Image 1 (cartoon, rainbow, N blue to C red):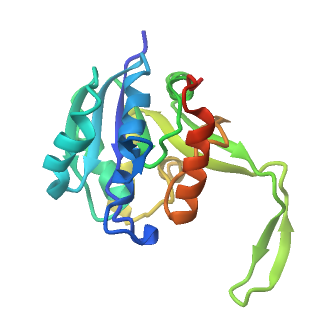
Image 2 (cartoon, rainbow, N blue to C red):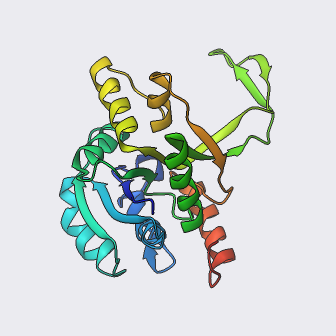
Length: 235
């Protein structure tokens, strides 16, 4: 059976949320956003350990207010976050003890991911080395210059919007982050760092509900999604 560990990154300051509370700790229903995310991973049978990457000053808060109320069965290790997301993921990777695991990396503020999507991503990585979730672009894509004028219309049929989770064989994603660190490369996601190695990453369908909550408008949408799915099993 495939064995996987999860690196959940929740180190954001929430500046775009315009809130005194970090966005990952805001309530969605009766639980913080981050707690919902952790419950989804805890419900995935392939995940045996979770590395939760948060600011070190928040460790006690997370133990008392994020972890204690939800009684997870998976082993949890708190890891200190870095200056930026890429640094936080790297800290999570360095904390992993079982180098044979598939590593599945996820944004803590994507609470609507399902155990099935997580499992599909892990299985894809076990087969192909790297596998991420995404959704096909549905709007027309425009390439716009710095002056605000359209340069050209991009082909939509091959364009996908990347999501997390993103899963990789440990040796591949660790090599990608090591390489990025040595060369001073910054990526918009973990798959892009693997692409710098000229290695292939598979894309599989995610969900339009698997949104990343970064601002107040996202929170309005998240509450609407939560109302729709409340009382239903997430599949």
